[in-house]
Image (cartoon, rainbow, N blue to C red):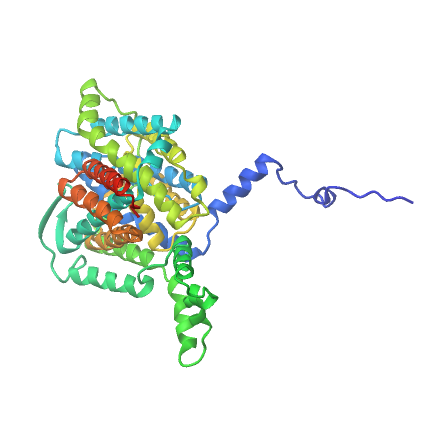
Length: 478
């Protein structure tokens, strides 16, 4: 007697069928992009960008009455979407040139901030939709990108030292007197946090692409690329004699210590301790969202004072540099983070949120470096941060401002310091003196001129002249 075989065993068991075809592919990709590689390091990495995010948003909320609750809700959604799309800790940071203009110009209020964000987003989205951003990415040489990254990293590091060394009036964007050694926001606290993070995280781990480059160099120099030379750390972990056992335990335990999370939680506790009455000012419920009315004059000022300086920074640091850094740190995920896709997501999210008063945001290489430094390796890292922002925005809204304003600025400086150093370290892969010269020239002009666009132009000119000279002499630039 013939038997029939059910081709769908799940149906025979009465189970639900999984989606097939494109739907299953999308769900599988979403699960892969949001899956934590390791819980505590991923959660720790989520805190790596707060050293940039909190001071800027807090300053604008205090000085220009930016709605903190609305910004938390929209940036939380942005974080979740970018984590889902890219599968890497793609950051969501405030647009820094617009923020700097708003903090230095009292006439540049919320309507002007939103106008600048919308115009910048529209321009970047246009470049992405027409695939012109891909051409920009292809044309800009690596030494120029590294110069921009180095300048941005050093800017972060110098701002972090200023946060640590001097007391800050974030509402006015000014440094005050020297920070005292003791107290709940003293120098001793900041120095202790730096030492703690160094002991736990060290100098950070190298990306797989850099390890492969190191192996290739060994082969070119005739060194036998055996397993012990390619990954000496793994060999050390297997040693059990002469103290190898406890060293192996420390090596395995250190990445599981959420240093950035602990620093942030400590900061929240100290914020409450510094002003206990602020807790009683918390109110349940989200901020009331309203469409921002933007006058013709606000559009004009937003374009001239905000969008014009922000567009070069967004194109270079938020698209070109962040795509290059993603390729360095996550070569297997690089195909999803293309200049076209990054431009579209950055433009799209601001063309929605800015109309309701959310701070204009972009993807930044500094945020990616900071989250990688503290252990972020997947999209789940930024999705977790987004969930936290969204929950706080919906539950407490703008009433959180009073508590956050008491957060120890020195601890924010510590987080920002490590993010800046991690971004600057990416510039160490220049292989020739000519490339290093272009990179350092671009960095110097960007820092002294306070303009990434000016540094970019000088770097491009220098790179072009060096290539012309190399061609005329019949030598290779590299």
